[in-house]
Structures are given as structure tokens and as C-alpha cells.
Amino acid sequence: MSDPKIVKLVDESSNRSSELPLISGTLGPACIDIGTLYKDTGHFTYDPGYGSTASTKSAITYIDGDEGVLLYRGYPIEQLAEKSSFLEVSYLLLNGELPNKTQFEGFEHEITHHTMMHEAQKNFFQGFHHDAHPMAMLAAAVASLSAFYHDDLDVEDPADRKLAAIRLIAKMPTIAAACFRYSVGWPMRYPRNNLEYVTRFLHMMFEVPSEPLEMNPVAAKALDLLFILHADHEQNASTSTVRLVGSTGANPYASVAAGITALWGPAHGGANEAVLKQLKEIGTPDNVETAVKRAKDKNDSFRLMGFGHRVYKNFDPRAKIIREMCHKVLAELGVNDPLLDVAMKLEEAALKDDYFVERKLYPNVDFYSGIIYKALGIPTEMFTVMFAIARTSGWISHWIEQHETPGSRIGRPRQIYTGAGVRDYLPTAKR
Ligand code: CMC
Image (cartoon, rainbow, N blue to C red; front, side, top):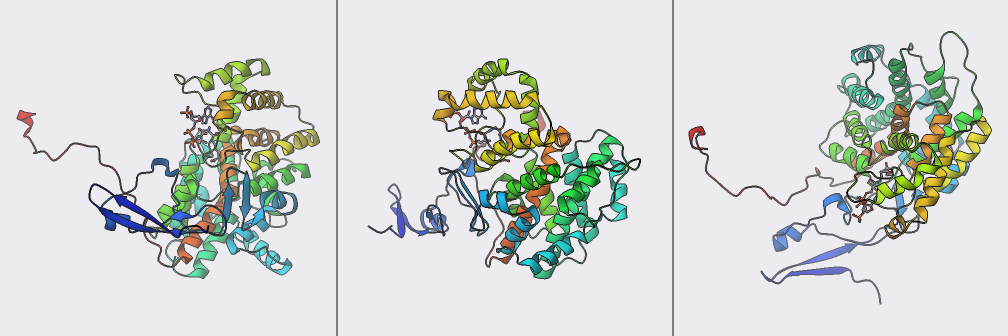
């Protein structure tokens, strides 16, 4: 039997009904289009956390959470991780197709020639307290790009949108490195155009004026791979935030700055920082059992950070790649980190524990990434900034897709009101 194309919803109390069409994408379950539900029945739908709600159509990224599948523009993440580069993936996300040699060279040239910050923006950092969190500085600095590039930006012009995308992808590592250098009191470094994207970023991070930087190429390769894995993840909290802000017509810098603040939370991108702090707190493999016990205790707010995912009810495919890479990178860099032993023991204990098995809680992308960042010398507070650099490609691709979609409307959810009923204002003396 072929799929029904209509779902009929009847409100028996009022005898009003709605015939709701099913919309199918290329892959994934069909969705019930509830656009006429309120008009037909007088009811809204209620789905806090959006567990059953598709907020948009999108051709960028596909996830099958039950099977642990992640595709960027149709390409499996495993193939991109093995064969591609972050910049090529950024081109793919933005343009829908992998670039040929000329297209890639053109894209890399454009990115390379938009990496500098406005000199006035450098002064902006001086206003932050010396121990400001780098994510706070990043969000503010990216929002401030609006002040530098707002006046001549027409969000309805495809060329202007593309230029904004190039600027954001190009400047994000420069701004991120500036956040780090300000927090440690080092002078800012200018981007070096003779280096490729990730190596340039590592130079801006770690090069000091007093001596040349000796960098192990393994570090750049590892970071490039982490950037590929973090580049996009369909309608997650930060991307949905970028789209919601973008739906108002706000400029791309303001929209992406909002995405950065959404990413910061420990339930989302802030988890990588939280994982490392938690592994340090656990300290040794002997304490893993106690941690697992606490995570299961409903009277304790403690959760295993880096475990569980709204969409993946199977291994997060990114976590599989990072887990393997973690061992390799640490070996190649000659780093022996006891936290890796704690992480492995924690993973092993959780994966055979009924609580985690029943709830399908597997390690996610953030579980092992922090150990790699740490091995690369990146401080814990910068972990979510790394995520933000990579996710910028995804955020801006979604922002552009939203503007290219005919009939896009402002995002405006409704609510179930649970406050007081209508009542009369009382003068102070009578309250
Ligand atoms: N440790 C212990 N219990 C957990 C965990 C965890 N990490 N995650 C979920 N649970 C339990 C939760 O208590 C609930 O149990 P019950 O059914 O008995 O009430 C059940 O599993 C379902 O959890 P939920 O909170 O309803 O699931 P969610 O889809 O709303 O949340 C999540 C997903 C990722 C926010 C959550 O799993 C979590 O807080 N994980 C830890 C933080 C983390 O690693 N976040 C990174 C996510 S991946 C990268 C990214 O998105 O940026």
C-alpha cells in the first residue's frame, strides 16, 4: 500500500477537522504539514523542545539518528572526514556541490584575502576584563562585525550574502585567536596568507614575537578533521537560532552572533568544555563507577557530559571518528594523557549499564574532542570557540538558504498560556 498523502485530524468536541498534507523530503520520514490547523480547528500544536517538529525544509545536511548517519549535501561524513578538507567542506555546504580545482582555488583565494580584522576592531578587545570567557568575547566581536560591514550590506542581494559568508568564514579564526591572545596577554598576530586555513589559525594562536613557531603537521591535520566533523548538523539549537534571528531580516553577523551564544550552553557546544572539566573531576578510572551512579540518580543533577543526543539514538558517527582519531593523534604527538584512560573507562561503563542502554545514551561528538584539543595545546575555555569556528560554515549556509527560499516568513511560535485569567488592576492600598 502506498503512503497516504493526507492525515485527517478531527476534533470530536467541536466537529471541526483539518486535512493535513504529508510532505516528503529526499530522505527521512514524511512530515505532516500543519500550516492550516489553526484556521481549520482553532488549535495550535504543542511540542516543547521540538521533538516532533520540522522547522524548515533544507537541502544542506541529513541525519538519521537511529542508524547513526550524517550526510553533508548527500556525502557521508566518514568519506568527507577521510578525503576532504574543512575549506572544501565549507564550499560544499555553501554551494551544494564539491568544487573543481579552479572553483576551490578561487574560494580559498577569497577566504585568504578576507582574514584580517579591521584595525579598529582590535581595540574593541581592550574593553574586556582580562579573564572574560573567550565565548563571551567571540559573540561580542562577531556581533560587532555588523558595525563594520552593516551600512553597505543588502541581505536581499546574493552577492552581498556571499561576501558576508566569505567574511565570516575567513575572519572567525582571526577573531577566535584574538580572544585567546587577549586572555593570555599576548600581542595580536596578523593572519599569514602564505599558510592554509587551519595552519594559519594555529599560527595566529600560538606564534609569539620572540621565537618562530615549530608546529607538528599532525596538529593541523587533526584540527582540520575536527572542523569537518563540526561544520554542520542540520537544525540544532544554534542553527535554529541563526535561522530565527535571520527570519527577522537581521544581518548575517548579528544572526551568527546569536548562534554563538546558543552554542555556548553546556547542553550544546559548551559540552566539550564541560566534558574535560568532568573528566578532570573524576580524576582516575577508579572513580568512574561513582560518576556513573551519580549520573543515574534522579535526585542528583549530575549528568555524564558528552553523552546522549536528541537525534542520535545510536552512536554519533562523529564520535566514532573522533574516538579513533584521539588515540592516533595522541600517539603521533607523543602525548600520554591519563584523562583518555578515564574517558575510555567511562564509555565502557556507560555502554554496558542498563540506564544508558535503555535510554540509548551514547558518546556524542563532544566526548573525545576535548582530549584532542588539549593535546594540541588549546586551553579548555577555547574548546567551544573551536566548535564555533567550524560551525560558522553551517550557520551561514543555513542563513543563505533561508534567504534563497521563496515565501520565507518570520519565525513566530505560539504558546499555551498558563498565567492568571483577566483581572482588574487594584490600587496599591488594596493589594
Ligand atoms: N547523563 C545522564 N542521563 C542522561 C544524559 C546524560 N548525559 N542525557 C540524557 N539523560 C537521560 C535524561 O535524564 C532522561 O532520563 P529520563 O527519561 O529517566 O527522564 C533521558 O536520558 C532523556 O534525556 P533528555 O534530557 O530528555 O534528552 P534530550 O534529547 O532533551 O537532551 C542532551 C539531549 C544532549 C541535551 C542530553 O543528552 C544531555 O544533556 N547530554 C549531556 C550534554 C551533552 O553532552 N551535550 C552535547 C550534545 S552533542 C553536541 C551538540 O549538540 O552541540
